[in-house]
Length: 357
Image 1: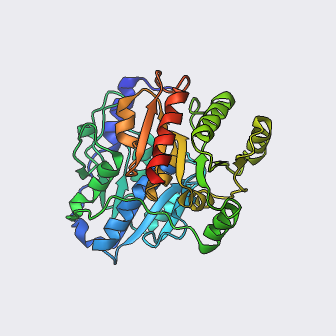
Image 2: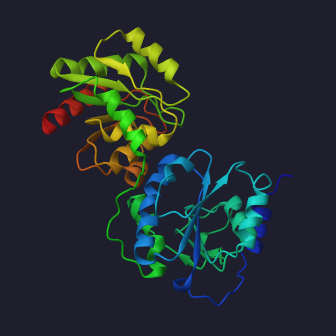
Image 3: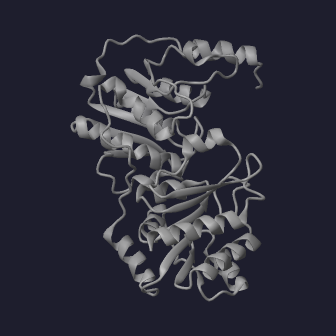
């Protein structure tokens, strides 16, 4: 069934009518965070869980995660329960949503910065006592202010990094964050695997290159990779370049490395989860990557990083790297890194290598 914009606006206003509940959120026993989207978004949000537990250690923190980003929370001591949003549609997840409803959730925190119908429907099914969200842009003919089911909105600040926007959801609890750093907790065996692999290259400056992001258009092409590797090696003889891999692309990356035929360029070992990748990144010296979750994972460990970003400056302000040493090369186009300045990536990489040497 196709609804007109006018009908969508009418239904959204009806769906978001206020169900008044007299409840002080500072007395909450549990909080459910809706974060069933991307890996990088979950990484950035980890500071919210930590800061909430710091002030309210008794509160149970539940996270509705996606199948894609759930592994970010493995071993996280601040998260009490992870609920998987397997189907990523209302009907497919109805059973888990009804179970959450039966648990009588005190507070839900939702992070969408525009009007998102499927998030609103999920909140209605879960039926928490109070709902916190970020300030919303209008959509479907409905402004964010008209969604009166939301009890608290964060303040909206232009050019503010999402790490601070999302930490703003803690303001109704009276929490002033002590830190906005991200948290990742891999196991000792995962770190041991990373160190065993890297011990092949003693006394080398280890440069990790991530080739692509999940979004189409964010990929370093083969010829660009070869130019970057040669440019770094030319200025730094004592360098080892490691191409990061995911479980689904080890074979293709290994084939690419073989085709390039440079003895100082190798694929990483086989990783099974994003935390395996995180363990490796923590023990590298420099990261080069398009704008994707790897930016935020590297930032979690304050690794020097060169980011390749699309032209869109607004997007960059929201998701920029937070490592103390970071440099960014911008494409000349929106929604893609095609045509980025390879020489500038080489220049910035060499500057960072010199700075940490």
